[in-house]
Length: 109
Image (cartoon, rainbow, N blue to C red):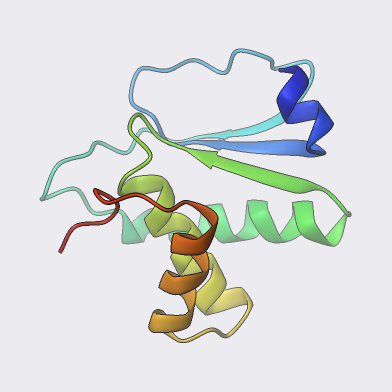
């Protein structure tokens, strides 16, 4: 928790299946039950996540988006936010996220 606070995190998008919000009095949470399965419709949650993130940023806060492995769900939400709210192309949004979270297993296509 100290690292999150030192980084200025004020909001957390928790899209990890079965992972509770550990610090509900310290951070504002958006809890989503998004399964990491090929047939899961993640797009239907985009507007909720975008609204939550936009309000946080508009209020001067910072958002942490996490899932169980940090490979697909969290990255997908961040990429979609950058494309919609920041008007980035898919390529630019992907490169931005990859720079922030480099990993050889990240978002394998």
